[in-house]
Image: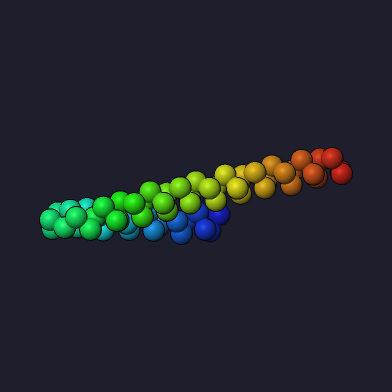
Length: 66
């Protein structure tokens, strides 16, 4: 898994934890944390898909030239 995807997943987990703590404390700022968790989750999926596509493209290029 790409390093940026791991970082995005870590941010997602921390944002979810912050949202839970905010809502438990009665603060509606947790909505911002939920939005940040969604954004970082999408970033993680993007980086995973991009790495998979790059790996497939390099394998295809190696098969064509080799």
